[in-house]
Length: 106
Length: 193
Image (cartoon, rainbow over all chains, first blue to last red; front, side, top):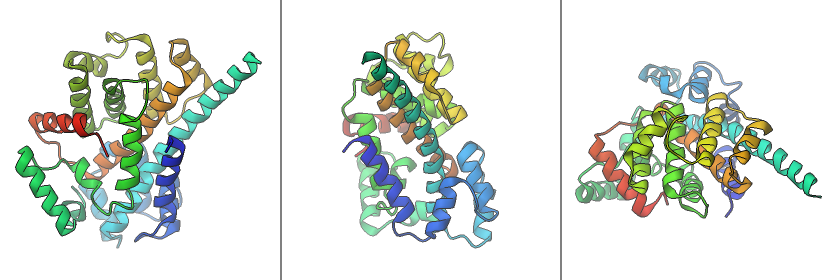
């Protein structure tokens, strides 16, 4: 399979497959937008400063009633979401340059 | 790891496998490897397939170059576990530890070919700023890199921007240098599949 298929397979699985968190929560984590606190702050850290996440951040989410399996899923969705925004920015910049090349050649 | 399910929540057969690996390698399975065994149909399996394609699939970048990209992205994200893990694999593939250390410490002056340097700088910008533009791509092409190589590099960047975040969010244990060397040998021999 090429990258596009493998990429889509990963995104589709985490966002539309079965899980312990709702599809809406997973999409919100992926988008880094719209989750209730303290999840919202945790996922923002996953997206932008994961190296600063502490035991306390995880404990706060658990104290708010989020289960470990839900955290497992939502942290993954948050990480994949941010990486995918980067990836798509890179791919669209590349596509723009490749299109120009094509025009020059013709 | 910070989620107890990632320390102890594995099926019996998986726990048995972890035990066998520890027995033969002398080291516990690294947390990066354990993670993909937890409910593998959700994340582990599709993630492994993408990563294997990016790191060991067809590409004109060498395995050493690709592992260096992984280490460099990890460096930008300040992910201790992944910097150590992938600089060890890159150093093993190149048979050159100094080259890898030089790139991670001072990309501008490291002794590497211009195309690889330009690619690493572009991946660094994408990782740090979360976006790049057509000019960033043109700079890499001007350094002699083709579109396919850029696509391959972007895929590595995607894979490691995920893994770095998971390593730091879940709190992967950072083991001894010897354990990373053992892990590097495994990844060079067997890959990510």
